[in-house]
Picture 1 (spheres, rainbow, N blue to C red):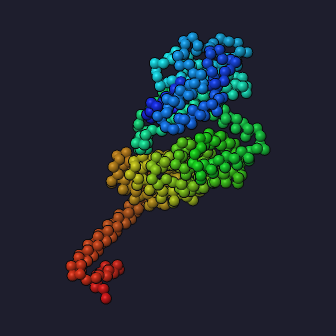
Picture 2 (cartoon, helix red, strand yellow):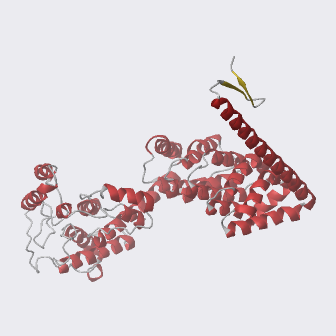
Amino acid sequence: MIKQILNRFPRKPSKSVESQEGEGTSTSSSPANSSGYNYGSSNASSLSAADSNSSLGLNHCDTFVQAVNSKLNLNESMSASSYVALSSFRDVPNSERQNLFIRKLQMCCVLFDYTDRSKNLREKEIKRQTLVELVDYVSSANGKFTEIMMQEIVKMVSINLFRTLTSPPRENKILEAFDLEEEEPSMDPAWPYLQIVYELLLRERDYLKTVLHRIYGKFMVHRPFIRKAINNIFCLFIFQTEKHNGIAELLEILGSIINGFALPLKEEHKMFLVRAFLPLHKPKCVPMYHQQLSYCITQFVEKDCKLADTVIRGLLKYWPITNSSKEVLFLGELEEVLEATQSAEFQRCMVPMFRQINRCLCSSHFQVAERALFLWNNDHIQTLIKQNHKIILPIVLPALEENARNHWNQAVQSLTMNVRKIFSDTDPAFYEECMHKFQEDEARGKDLKSKREATWKRLEEMAAMRVASNEPVLVSPRTASLSPSP
């Protein structure tokens, strides 16, 4: 999660834009404020004029900062005694901790110029320590948070996180598209403080998941409505926006819900699988929530093994063609589903499934071929394959032979030899029969290729002779002969 957040920060912010993210405070003074600073962000209208001036261009950033400072009564020359650390939660009685919590939140509403590392060092460290104390208090507090406390939390988070972000230059975006993982992320100057504020938000997301799950568990009458609402979110995400920050969390909730489904499964639940869960394999961003999605899919198959055929055919429908990393994820999920698949369901879908596995075995991307070969390392899957080897071996044998002869990766070649040995040991006579047929087909293919090349060569020679005499030529594809036009 932190890496994903880091990647969204600007790589090389310009000095003029950084100045907009500099020192600033808010306008309304709180009764709990004893440090002499203004907290909060209530005077939005007074800032709108200055903000509109900033839209004229980066050349007016200095004017914008001065306008903000004047509106917020910002004192750039902070005195060392005006911003002091408050008492620790352990040093005050329980009855005073809520008030202290609010005062610490208001204290953290003060913003500093983090682009200048030599400025306000003591005050910045006090703020960082205070943020750490707040996170610890939220994670360990047993009591309930009052409405005032929640308002102050939202206020503090908003002031610290809602700020101007800059996009990297266009050439940097192009580089990111090709080398996003290996390029060093540029750290926001305020990140040591923003990171702690984000931790506070992450705990809020955990609470939201818990609340929704408990509502689903306590209020049975609302369960269909909740499932329908989640289904609508999934459909909007899959077929329209492909943008939603909570898909993984919703799938985590649904994973525990599916685990509690009564048997036999209702038709509504099966339709939920077909219309919501399987299409979630379609979006490009599926790696962000694939682990949770795979768990939900496997839960369905473990609940009702007859759904294995439906699930596997759904995977084949959305199987990626050019995205190798996504293909590796699909192969991993396929293995998990096959572990819960019985022989009857396996036989229904094994032909289209192993045709796709055959294409994966032929992949020049070694991770795809390697992950496909790993399926034979699973004891349950290997048993199913052995039981149906007379159908599966003719499908995958050409890919196995091609890998054994020509694949560039040594690990893929080694795994291929192991798979060939499994088939050979299972039924030596049938393996030799398939090999003989493969060799005949290979020889026939070579003959056809040589005949085709000879035909084209003859056509080229005859065409060259006719062109030399400037005569129009008709080509008969069946006889591969040339004749003058009438």
